[in-house]
Length: 495
Ligand SMILES: Nc1ncnc2c1ncn2[C@@H]1O[C@H](COP(=O)(O)OP(=O)(O)OP(=O)(O)O)[C@@H](O)[C@H]1O
Ligand SMILES: [Mg+2]
Image (cartoon, rainbow, N blue to C red; front, side, top):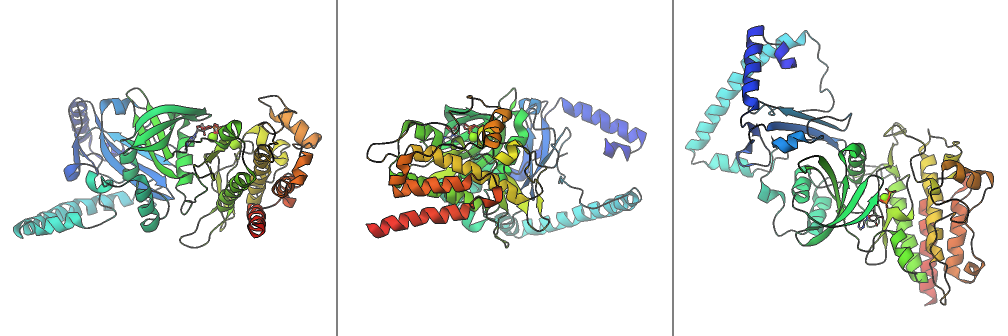
């Protein structure tokens, strides 16, 4: 309607009538994925224009919307700070570039000049483009050809060049990490992959959605499906995984994020590598581990967390990240016996220049059973990013305890239990946890027999040093990683 305000009453009426007529008919829209960069909607469809913040960079998508997509809840609304979407109903009405933040400050007085400039510049530009195009056509279409082949990042790609048919996921991800920004596949490639996944079976359900095993070009992938109600969580998790240089062998490999309409509502997809063993929680429930197996798992978890926590400075650097929901259900076990940290939906990033945390933090967001004492009794210093890393370390200690109990030495091991299983009910409240962890100062018990195995003795010592009530006294993830790698070194020397 803002555009209408700039027109006279007669012209506005004419535009309104045109809009109403076009509402019921097919539309032509700008489309980056389509031939000639144009698509045509079905009757009662719309043109779609969107921009999302991916790694702090605005990524725009323009296309046609079907009437059923139009009904979806996500396509036509914007969410604060993270995405802006616009549905419109006249031919090529999505031919403008949306921005999340105002590009330049403009006041009412500059409108007259802008309009004047537009009136002069637009026809002249069109004339120039016409002349250039005719010259190109005269030169045996060579000019047009080379222009289409030029690798301009702003130019949309066609379907074939988006995801070359013979590439497997590993190659795509490898290409991306060596040539791109080191953060994620381009948005259009992500969408193309997501739209060609065939879901196979549901493998789990969490707070924010359901996880499915899917197939993409014959390979297994995991698809976490969020409902449109949880758009913020979907966006946050996708955004976190695409943090520059986050990719690490002990962080779940992110593949794609997509919003997909199923006719009646919009499903938000997050596609990642699939690990058939499932979570560490699933794995430890099912199997015991050898001493080596325990150390490999513990070391890989500590390595993943150390990478998250570490700030890397420079253009190819990464911010420090605190996970805020470390638990055995949020760690997945790979085929080779190592682990990856998953579920970054609650994580926070630290901007060391401004010493700010990237989102307003809610202090009690994790899983109550794994919450550090300072979170339970609300004494955590939320102005310091270190506090969040220290709370992660406390939770890491609890995960190590779950793991070490399942380590089988000469056939002796404990059954699988969650931390504080013998102190609190199955779905404990913050109050239940606070009583045990803060008031009674209890921690999970460390069995005596762990003293007779060097690796278990070291694990027990690490746990205690992760659980200090005084968070400043806790180990860092890097320290835990170094101590565990020395256990393997000692073992290697003995062999
Ligand atoms: N990439 C994956 N590969 C294989 N299995 C997975 C993968 N991601 C998740 N799963 C399985 O799906 C289950 C559900 O995961 P999800 O993260 O939605 O919930 P959760 O971790 O169990 O609970 P919460 O919502 O508290 O985090 C996991 O416990 C795990 O068994
Ligand atoms: Mg989870």
